[in-house]
Length: 326
Image 1 (spheres, rainbow, N blue to C red):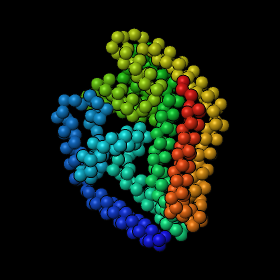
Image 2: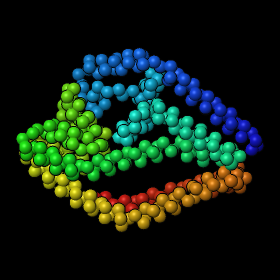
Image 3: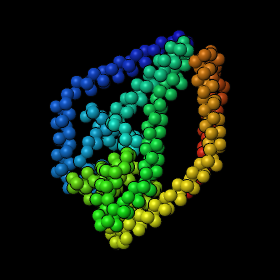
Image 4: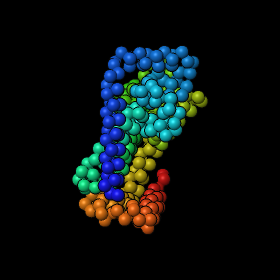
């Protein structure tokens, strides 16, 4: 039975690798001319519509979900693909949804093959495939969180620079351009994109909404909400920015104190949650026969499901205890 499982898995992995190779060859044969034609057609279609800048996805950019046109309608109407697209935009990862899913599948096959080769059993390929499949998602999530955190750290300095520019008589867009030219990424990249969108015809309100779409930050939303209110009813925007900068500075200080207090509980949460998973992977690699009863015996499957449920409940409870909203 074990040899049959290994044969089936080997054939599956070989077919998957052949399929990914075929997709890569087809993508490589897509010449730059056809890509240019599609981009021009997309831009012409956007120009013909009268809603340029009305939503975050209509600012004269290439919003295809995949390089393969047959997959675009399927992915565009899929809520999961749309969520992945938003995550890639927020992490500023230069991949389309189709490429990202293909990368995750390839990592799953590669990791499964490596662990199966090391462990000498098909059972070792199961945790390998899971780790390989979720590794790109973990990287994208880490890059997204780091980018947002860095931008929030730069926001106080950007507000001070914008307030000084406004007191000097500049307009809000000129102040944003000054921040984009004087400060490092990622805030300079985001403010530059806002200025470019306004330059090609988008309204400032739509460009600000696009910025909040790319950077889901509470502090940035607070700033841009104040800017939008000031544009509608007037007021001293420089003074408002100084007050918001003080609020953000105190909030950041309080969050730092909370993070230092809850650091031990967070470390315990990750250690207790990853230790059983690590032991499961280690046993699957070095002692596959010991793990077979958990998959072949009904009682073993019940134990695995129960352990997974309790593990998930424990992680959720510890995260709720350590998560303090400010």
